Length: 170
Image 1 (cartoon, rainbow, N blue to C red):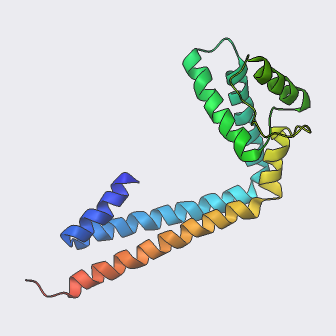
Image 2: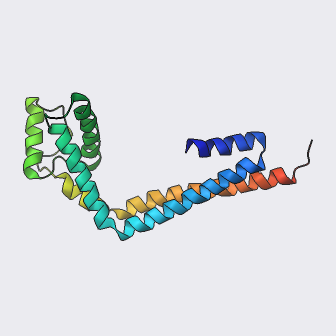
Image 3: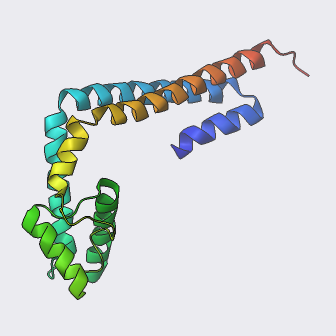
């Protein structure tokens, strides 16, 4: 992404048609990849849900495990906190959520569950499944917003490239 941004900025500053054309080509490739990933993700949302649950389980196991190093445990804990705060959930199931809340209270773990979690613990497996089945439209809206931004970038880069071609040489 940094290289693509460099091509666009430097091409505009230097008024280079070649760099702006390369920037446009990279944007077309990114747009095509985004559309393909969106279609594939929608068609295989059950697979994506299972993979996200597997990823969550592996991060959860690393965060509460004593066999991994302290650095890896802290990194896993920060990712797990992000999951918990974003999805407002805790644990893999009812008992693991309750275990995590109790271990947070005792001080065995470093506040893995959100502070504002309600008494009725919602496990994260349920929240992840809800996200990819009931709220798939939110993911689609974000993807659509990114696609619109990319389309405007492509339009502006081509307008600038054509303007450079038609401008008189000084």
